[in-house]
Image (cartoon, rainbow, N blue to C red):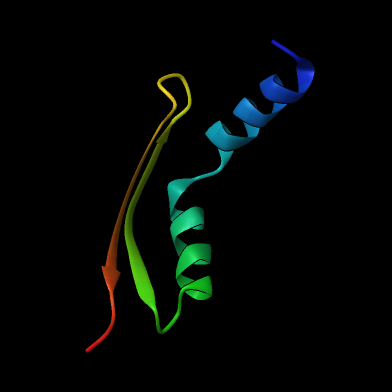
Length: 55
């Protein structure tokens, strides 16, 4: 494992899910709302739940 990938794993593990949800909701304002976020580095899986706004 390279130093870059090890550093990236550490940064992702230290970033709280609340911060990711908050920033995503600011970016997606008026389009969608991110309600749940979970990222598993070891299994390389991402779980995201959103609520879309629309007609």
